[in-house]
Image (cartoon, rainbow, N blue to C red; front, side, top):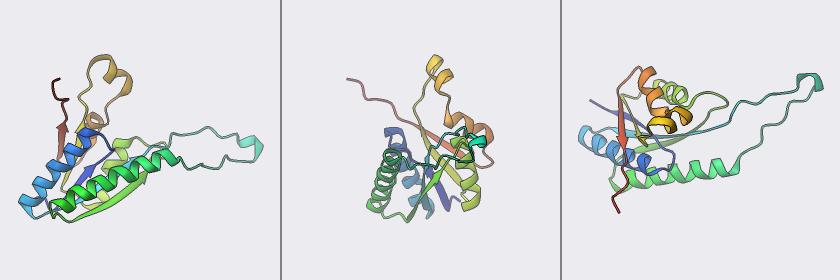
Length: 152
């Protein structure tokens, strides 16, 4: 049923839980996992009159976080003996949900799995929700996995 499962990772606990759920599904269906992280590059204004466009500088911290998230996903898949591939994508001003949806289509994913932090109220209004945006626009099944902090 689900032969190609795209799991979006960002290093958060909810993303780690999403990988674990994707691994369970892949094991049950004989599928494989594509772990994807999207590196944010906000759109920039360029002074066209000067004749120079500012060179896009590499955000080392963002790349390091992306590498850690992908390495963690790979380790979780390897531990469960589930075949997996890794991919990082740059957003360059695109919404993260759009990038995830586009890559899911390119890779022929049967299912998209991603974590959600479960923000509500003002926080959700101000920060937005990649998960909600993906749910509204995806053309394939999406599974959202929520990580709840353990009670102290």
